[in-house]
Amino acid sequence: MERGARVELDAGRCVACLECLEVCPRSSGISRPVFRVSGEGRPEVAHPESCIFCLDCTVRCRAVAIRVNGRRLPPAPLGDRILLLKLSSMY
Image (cartoon, rainbow, N blue to C red):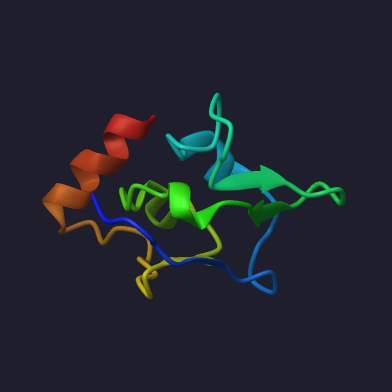
């Protein structure tokens, strides 16, 4: 687990699906969530220091709009067995 993760959300790419809030283990049921819904109904980074660097938000983001410590993972290529297993466990 890395502390002090840099979580960036590219508002220009974001499609406001809110899946980042659904998949982030640190965005529901805690007092300092990584993501929250803004007053406009869009996701925003609230407390990046709560990030546990699992990268689930980057894998799940359909718009590839989230970076964690500079990593922006594209949708999993079909040949990548490890990422496919990770994705299949999310659904």
